[in-house]
Length: 56
Image (cartoon, rainbow, N blue to C red; front, side, top):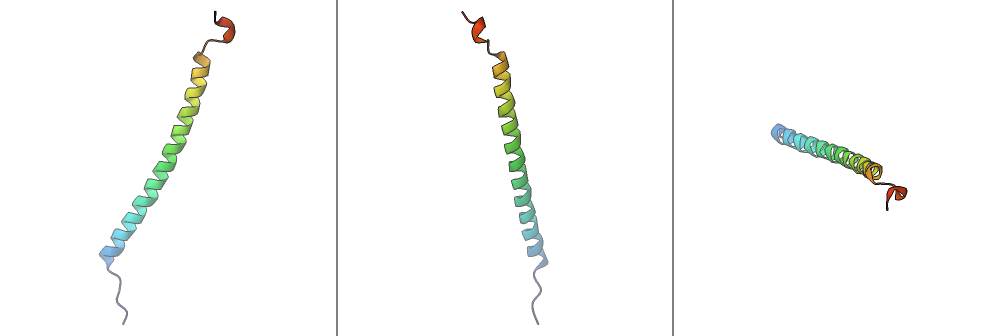
């Protein structure tokens, strides 16, 4: 008769897989946030810079 898998081991493997999946999701979200912040910062810096006609 075939031996049944150890339930504790299966639970641990499932936890690890879920942690990895969630970690990847968080990293993807963080990348999107960083890109948005970078873009908005660039736009704000451009708005704050004086125009060439205002320079002496």
